[in-house]
Length: 461
Image (cartoon, rainbow, N blue to C red; front, side, top):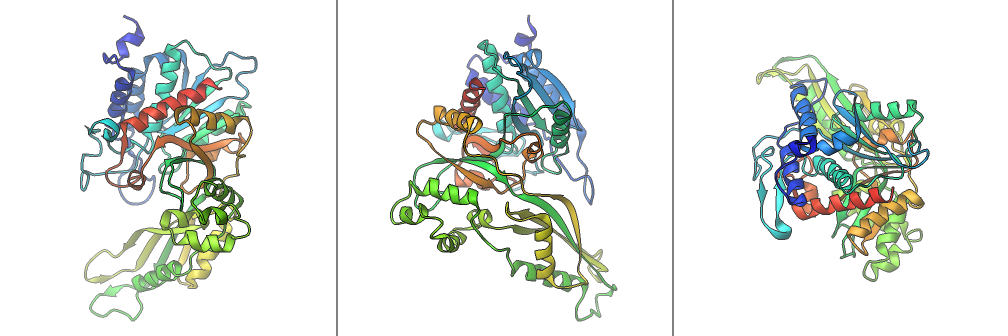
């Protein structure tokens, strides 16, 4: 028996096999945890098991592609192209194997059980990582595996870069990008997670559309810390450490960063606005003339739209005290800052300092990362990606946008001018809301459409 047949599932239907492979990988709890601070650290065992399971599930890929380990848990595959100079301008498809923590509490189906429910368009696989980001990782491997089975060889090299710590630092992707830079590789196209196929996400536009991130926000973590004299809780001072920290947080919340329409957002508004109902179409297609009005309109649309227009700050952790009857000697807050493309880490930090306006609140900047350069929404790389999307979804409206999250692809902007953030899945508003939250899930049909889109893209490369 060949290595391929030994490792293959006995399931004959390739779509059914793909779904079962996804479920097998979602069941492995590859949870990333911070390397510092309180709480447990990342357990390396599930990541080793994940890599071994990839080899078992995809023997043909591992027989025909080169694989090397990069960073702590990262994997880098090379599919050699057939053309002259094929290695110099490859296509890079990215995903990450790690997920954020999850417990069973509040989930309709356990987060690492990979349960499958429903039928037809409602058939769904539930579990942490189904969307973020094992769904894309498996869809990429399925596309490569199917093309290998069909005897296809790409014109240029194809690299698969799978990180294992995107949720905490992205050091695996940083190492992969550095390794490629050392080898003189400049990818012609990089595709990572980001936008998706959505609907009801833009005012006045009823039809579905695909959003491709041309850039992504910068990210940094701020630690706010107040240190004061402790003591017995029976005789509290008028302004303890916790009160001072609370005031700083309220001041920060009351002074949001300025909102504006950058060139990428203006292009998105024109593109989507051309399909909006009147009178919105008239306004959206004249975005430059109506920019102040549009800023006010979009700021009322909710958190997801507001985040497109400004640097955002979210207080994500609070720490103080060690006993119920003792005044804390220190109080800390962690602030997650997502920096708009027109801003910078320095400007974002300065805005926080001025908003808090208290020298007794110490501010520490951790893991600063600037906003990414803007990739072009034209040219061969962009056209190939759009054509692949429309091969699976004929006539679909496609628009650029600014990705609000941080992805591993930010480390590849130093070696490629064509870095795009797009996961080829149809996602409802409810499904998007489950990222990093309870009940993460992906519809089976949407997942299989993603496989088809990656296949279509690779045929063009």
